[in-house]
Image 1 (cartoon, rainbow, N blue to C red):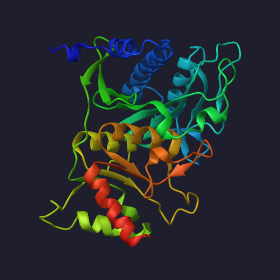
Image 2: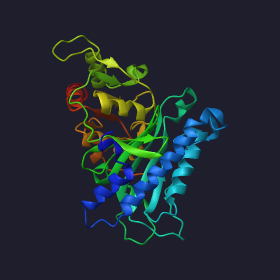
Image 3: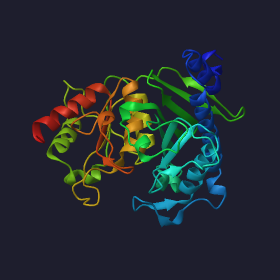
Image 4: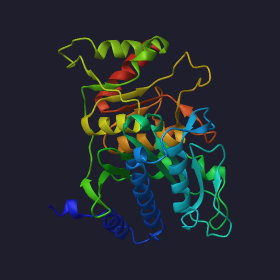
Length: 340
């Protein structure tokens, strides 16, 4: 086994910290706790079919979506990993309407955590990949005080760490600190995340596209024309592309990172409840976009990089196009031509 593959995630954190003498170790502790929560969630996901944790919890979340039992379990596990750790000043979850404060008996740290505890959970009963998405910012309010929404409402460009954990045939954590992307796979017999995908790079162009084509008639003209283009034989551009759509964003974007291509979740004009898009900026779009951009790809809402979109609320939504550089530029050409 190569030395890269025997590098644990803890060792990797420490090595990264040693490159920054000014570091206090707080961010390293934060990532330790995140890895711990991922191991706990992995255990629950793997045993879901053998225990009474599949199916709906019996209520809806702030998004108006049916909450799955595993959503609640995952949310609780992440909260309990951090409420006492002394590294966060506040948290925000896709499953909670308001900011999650840190109990006042604990130390207020200098970071924030925004997370989607179990993306794709509606597919869990079908044994389809699900995952946790996370976004970490450095607080902007004075240290030693309780965090506020202002600490969370920062752009994706200001993220200190962003990434995701995908629970599938193996559990894999992929993250970036703004200096490239690394992937770690959980080795079950050791209970350790090992560096399996160092310095991940997305191909400059891919031949896969991922979108819910059932909504074709509700897209803008530019999106329609682009999809028509990629499914039409064209020797110059290597089309037709292959459609790959799982319906679990974390799985679709993870595949796009590995194989190249483009993932698209455009505005849907038949959905008046979400006139600005469906995906959540803080919990889904911004962290996944940072990973893709750090791997050499691009992200956009059709007008600007997702990383430059300024959030105005904890549950802002955006359209999202993310993937290989050439594919995203190609899409933008169609949007510029037909939607402006």
